[in-house]
Image (cartoon, rainbow, N blue to C red):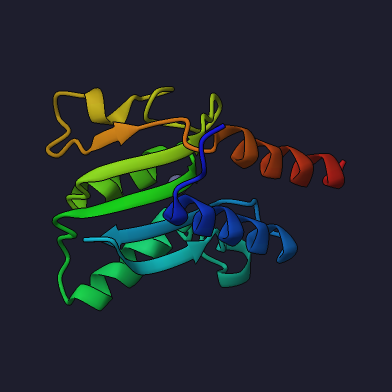
Length: 149
Ligand SMILES: [Zn+2]
């Protein structure tokens, strides 16, 4: 096993924080030039906001930090394969590179379902790196749902 890159380590920590708050455990981090601009956890329940996925929260915070709606040259690290909504936000934000952990056969939209970035109507496709710390990311989700049954 090779070491987990620092941004993914932080995203995994954010996912654990989400689980403690009763949210589906997903965490996301936006990095530019090696500097972390934003770290966010999934929070739709706490915020009464169905769009408050970790990726959306992190993209919003990073855009505010940069003072721009375009996150040019930024990388997004997220513990779970993004859904269709988040894939759309990633394209709108012009994220340069997407790194994600666990695949999501049910809700994912990158390698599953709509395969958003492969559609001819997708106007921006980041470089995509899947399976980063996949085992740990999947275990956090599995444990969360097992504890709820
Ligand atoms: Zn999402």
